[in-house]
Figure 1 (tube, rainbow, N blue to C red):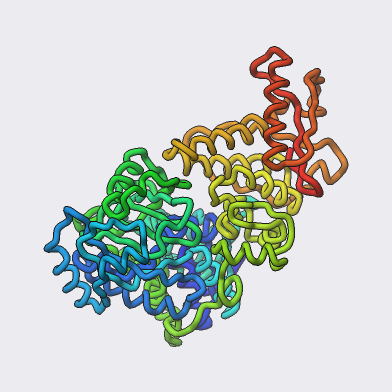
Figure 2 (cartoon, one colour; figure 1 turned 90 degrees about the vertical axis):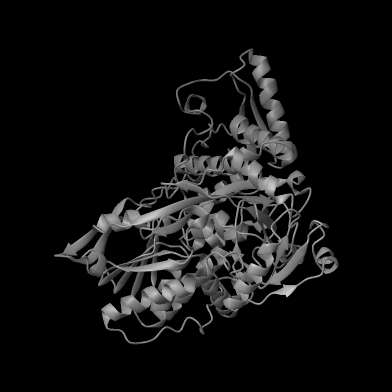
Length: 604
């Protein structure tokens, strides 16, 4: 049994922020997250550090929270922030009278604005519409939520040994009368039960907060809104671009790391895990964006994704765009007669620190802890050194070319090497290939994992001595999720890239397409066994089992070995398969093939 003062449920920005806040006050903390950190709303947003300009007219309370926290986060977490600044632009045909309302609303919440001449704006951002009617600059920025979460985790651990239990799902709560005294978790890595004893539970589960509350007997209604986003292959803009109007679809363009993200939509949903992107959403976003940045709909888009906004319904009729973006703190001792349970819901990533402070204040009051919050002035220790350049290609390319990042290059698009992957695996928190993607951007470049997925899977397989079937399932899930983000964008380069990936993973490696929603696969690592190749046995294959050696079927088909797993080697392997199929006279038959890289990075 794990004993602690506070159990936090949810590994998003708010949950991580609460752990950091309480650890600084000397409170013992355990955080439970059913997946990896920042896999929900915090990891599926557009990356904007809000100035509050988008909400100044309709939701001034949220706007004030955003600009206040914007200033604080720049100070305490500069390693996770890029100071891009932001433009609000009046497009031809938009309501001119809105400008004066917006300027007055910004002034009312202490949000600074500056009129920018069109010539200056076009010099900074050449893709802007030269017919824009007005441009104002605000202190927008961008935030890398994955860097932020890892920094919060490190800070909470260093401050008071806070424990972050990723891949731990809450099954039920333990009660004494009407008071919650703990929770029963399942370790999804090992399928083992974990009991946590605590004095206070803080529900910071984002869109899943309603489900967590229901398990404790607390009932409150969420208003979930799904939004779609599109990532371009390059940074078309270096400044955040917003339409100067009430928030709507396709009205924001955000430079994030090595790409630029455009969005969003607002679709009502009842599923907190609803990450669909429908064809009409892509069309709507691209059509709306043309007014800001003419021709941008013809540029290459890497992928699409959806995220769910955890909006709260306190009995108001507002929904979607109309719903407020502020946050609510619920003490269930007062609302439901359940002592020891607190829920923090709503809000935005920009306001995570303030949300965490309010939740931590309430928890400390229940624990009789009087030490005040210090997160507004205490720097969060960076996860990757004094100044993180993890998601900036230029710095990583310089390091690679000058020996600062030695080792085999695994992900060529995002410049990720084998030692980096091994180092990430060494920490123990990396379980799936998607964890590597979030930590290192493996598979997030133009090929969307086409050339690096199998390499990363091979390195992980050998490092953890996993079972072949686990590695097969992890690779299949990763590839399917990568394809899922491209599926609404199958035209031009994306279609050609998808066909090439299908040849690699479907026709060479024998992976089968998954139907329906792709479920997260967590390998059971309770008793990891060395894979057969480490014991000198037969080498496993991803082809269907009847073609495997030792399966009792003797194959008369030609066996071809291609040395080298680069583009030329894979092309040769594909050609060999096609020739082998014709030789057998069976359109469904495949030559038995083994494609190998030099050294220990082997893929079957």
